[in-house]
Image (cartoon, rainbow, N blue to C red; front, side, top):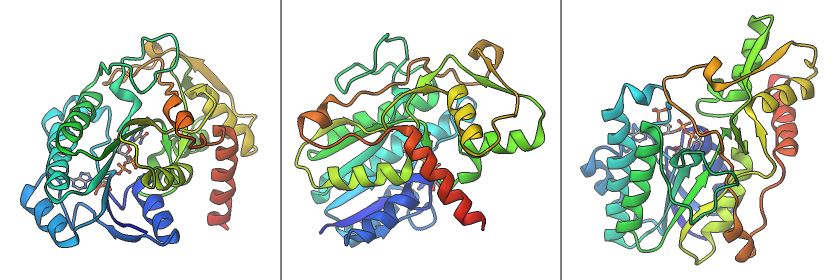
Length: 289
Ligand SMILES: NC(=O)c1ccc[n+]([C@@H]2O[C@H](COP(=O)([O-])OP(=O)(O)OC[C@H]3O[C@@H](n4cnc5c(N)ncnc54)[C@H](OP(=O)(O)O)[C@@H]3O)[C@@H](O)[C@H]2O)c1
């Protein structure tokens, strides 16, 4: 069992991850922006030196992809400099580090899924900031894992703003939904990702890993499936192109992350996103009762 510090522990992934690691018997310290602001090097130093963890799982981030286009400085301060602050201390105290990264480090122009060795080329401020974070971790922490994931869906933290909840709210408010159908990715459920991260924490392999659920879909297909599975299949939903639904940040058309490395080291891939979505909806129903 390890002593693990989870940053961003009250976020969508951080909440599920902290709970699962505790369930597995690890000694877990859960840090939030209130207990350790990662943009403040002295706070990071004080916390890491005091806890002296075996492993830091760094989930904390600025995650407002569209807002980042107009808040570049803040986004870079948290995702690039903040990650560097954490990495620096991990390097100093000899802790392992798992850095959670994103499909948005890629430009989405590849015709096939991205693998761990493909060269990142971010097309937005958020993706660039996460890529800079990756580079800091790579240069400062010898025993590091960069775990890229995509299209996160979880019940905690900013749950009200996860894609499924946004679609359900829109379905309640509007007669007709329009959802982008030319971006393809792998929805990844935080309760599944927590299990994979715990497994990876026990593996002495370092570098980049792709950590997503399996299968693939567009945002439109994800929305339609979620509505159907929740008994609202009758709600009109129209597939549109990204150009018909402009957003401040450009997003990769191809967000698919393949994980040949996980296969090579014998770590099973996560289940298909449809199965995980079914569980998300079942859990959601139980919470509502
Ligand atoms: N969401 C996705 O679709 C997605 C996809 C791929 C990768 N990722 C990556 O996965 C990780 C988890 O994402 P998530 O969606 O779970 O994020 P989230 O819910 O937004 O959680 C991020 C957490 O980081 C905290 N944070 C922000 N600034 C901080 C600071 N200066 N110091 C300390 N903590 C700070 C936030 O606190 P406040 O809420 O109080 O600001 C929040 O608790 C992130 O690294 C993200 O880049 C996410």
